[in-house]
Every structure is written in structure tokens, then in C-alpha cells.
Image (cartoon, rainbow, N blue to C red):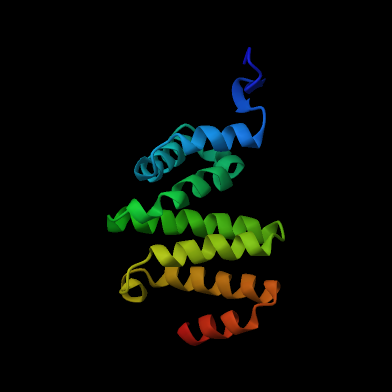
Length: 150
């Protein structure tokens, strides 16, 4: 703070500039970044009351998605798919269709090959919302691809 690298914002601190944040991030070994993102994402969710989850949903899901390649347990993958569905729906309601499609695609990618049999409702919701987001984005070829799957 004294050197001007961090600024106090309420009860927390933020980097004074994006370049400082990028420099600090580059000091974290690449093989540890995913685990750190997962830890941050779950910490955000665990430290937030249920009625406040909507306020931190994008930040938490973004963190979890950055480490998703390290999530192998089926129940954790399904949980992250559900979080991505919530984030995608929220982004859709805010008319941020590109972000919505990104969250929904990440959710779809978390599901294993047998997802239609095991998690039909979740799979249908993810695919349907993704198709709608891609329609709003004008990506009609992707919309057609998803429609054939459903």
C-alpha cells in the first residue's frame, strides 16, 4: 500500500493497476495456478451467504472455470456444470450473450459422455440455454449443431 501497488477498497485490497496484477500472477508457477483458482472459487462460494450468491456468482464461477481441467470427480464436475448454468442464465438475463454462451459451454464441457442418461434435465437445460445464447449471438451454425444434439 505504501509503495502504491495496492489500494484499499472497503475492507479489501485491489491492485493499483492491471500490469501489477499481471506481474504478480506471473510469479505463481503455472502448475499451481489451477489449484489456486479452484481454491479461490470455492472460498468465495463458502464465504458467501445463500442469498448473496448472485452477487459473487460470476467471480466465483470464473475462478472455478480457470481450474476446471483439474476437476475429475463426477460430483464436482456436475456441481460446476450447475454453477455454469446459473451464471449462463444470469448473463442471459443481463443480455450479455457472449458471456452466457461461454458459461453454458463450460458447463456442457464438464459433463461426461453419459450425461444424457445420468443428468438429463441438467444436460437439456445447458444445451437449450446455450442454443438460445448462440442464436442471440448470431452464431447460427453453432445453433444448428446444438439443435441436432438435443
